[in-house]
Length: 230
Image (tube, rainbow, N blue to C red; front, side):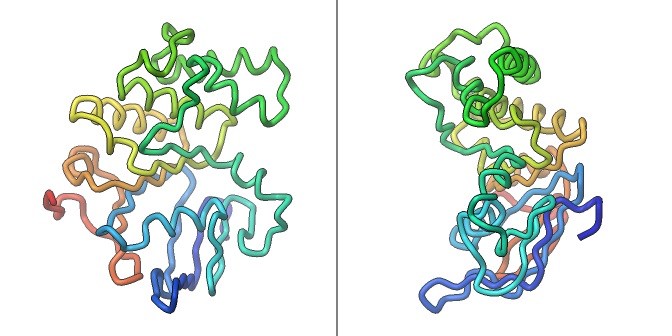
């Protein structure tokens, strides 16, 4: 894997109960690149992401993420792999009994950072997503768009090289979705690679980036302007 590549899949096959989900698939994500991952329901998008953070191992082929050879790495290195990734989910997964500050701080506490560093980093991340003034609010007090911004701040906390965003606008209205996309573009413009799963073709056309589509277990690049709303 070259120095400017952060994710590389080579000849990857994934099967479930005899059914081929990913078929001898190749994929590369460069450092600082923004790539959408699209495909119909059941096309294998979730399996693809799970390969990257080692929640799933391929039947065949090689997966490399940052400096990790994922299928062959020992289990004790999995937390290190996942700390090199910032993961943003559709359904937020915030801790309901902790305020905004503590939700972001949690990502740093589990990695054993000092309290003084945690405070500094949490405030930096909340500033990046425009929520410094909401640090003491509880998740239930926030709009959906604000909750997703907290999730993004938490994903940024450990300064990952890659952000995996799994339908980050799926539960948001159009205005909040655009706001989250603008934020992700800003993060990408600062040099972070982003791989984003989405069904929202309107956003893909509005914020065009490289777009990869899963079809019959293979990966093909498509032009954003060619997509039609489904």
